[in-house]
Image (cartoon, rainbow, N blue to C red; front, side, top):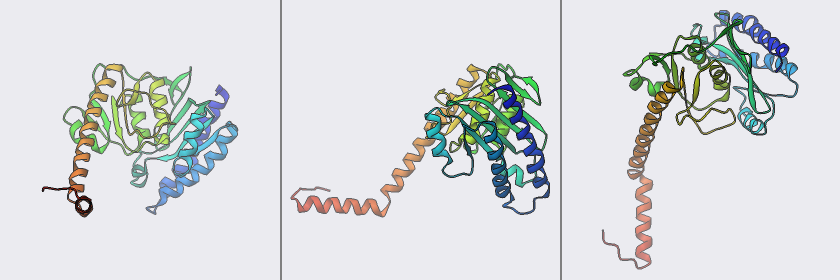
Length: 292
């Protein structure tokens, strides 16, 4: 994406946040207002961003077929807009500032630009390949820290992580990335159903700003992949691997515990008893000598 189109996208994202999201945020009364605002913003951005890159497929969170379209387009190395019209439902509905609008642009299957805008505080985090990352036009980078002290974590990691780290919580994935890039937190461990609209922009901006991120096995994140859940980010390679090790071990323990519970539940279920009775009757009818 060239500089002119990048600048135009910055203005579109900011204008949408300031003129569409904020008036609705200040006037909201209904509990389901978030959904209607999200839908309105998605429609506005679809038209505006498609004028920036007419070759790109527009995909947005909240559109059910979008994930399949995005996955196919990303693997085919097509141009794509990956947009979250309004990230942070809990913050928006509770009248806090923890919500954002995000966008990432993929060129031939590779993210080359991204934007995270916080309308309530008028902070725009943006970045472009070979240009760097900026907050409101001023270049920024992930702070060099020798040790990870404060991380943003999902609920499943909170209790255990609190024994080793200070914890900062937000209801928005976009805010997590904004905070680790701006230096408020040192890293994050987010466990949730993977949504490219939650991570594509933040992952790109954090890495471009000098951070390290990916899955718990340290492999890089890619919007076109599915079936992965936990995403880790840190200020440097050593701390990234430490957080990956922590989250990876916890992942294994949770999976083992879940499997054990499933097996116990199955063993005690009517289906298991019926299956055992059927197998016994089948063996007896075929002359199999069963001693039980």
